[in-house]
Amino acid sequence: MAHGLDTVETEHAAALPRSAADRIIAVVNDVVVKVSSLALIAAGLVLTYSVIVRYFLKISTDWQDEMSVFLIIGAVFMSAAAIQARRGHVAIEAIVGLLPPRVNRVRQIAVDIASFVFCGFFAWKSWILLDEAIVDNFHSGSTWGPPLWIPYSLMTIGMTLLSVQLLLQIIGQIRSRGGAP
Image (tube, rainbow, N blue to C red; front, side):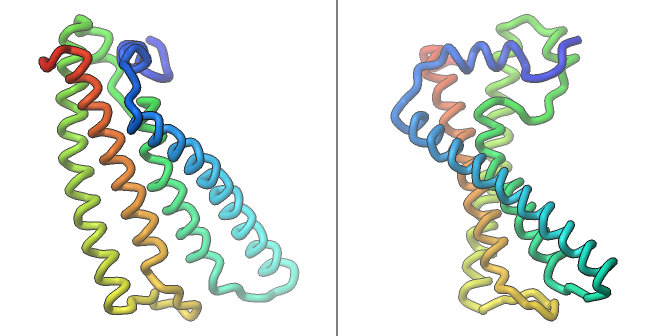
């Protein structure tokens, strides 16, 4: 059994014609992945700083946990669309290996549609949560107390990008099959 990206899905995705929207989101995904990588590095540095300062200098830091959580949340949600574009999310390879290619393509579009419905709903609810955080001026309950619109906006933008990526993949699959899955 091979590990890594699903060959049926990646070979098919590579063969699909790329629209202007696909090219735009590819550029956005590339930028987001680089920024997300920096956010993960920053989270590691913040936590390392916290451990060193607490252990050696006996100084308490009350902001580092929240800061690192914000950075990790941003990295995870913002990079989800780029991972989806590469079909890098967790998949059950045993099913792919047992099914013929045509059935795999139908399975793939069905999974993409179900994922789009879920992610679209999640994005919509995230926009509502973000609006509430901005309008009602929500802040975290910690002593640092940063505004919650920051992590909510990262979650909202990330889920919106993921929904757009899934929609573009669904449209691309339907177009490549002449309208039939």
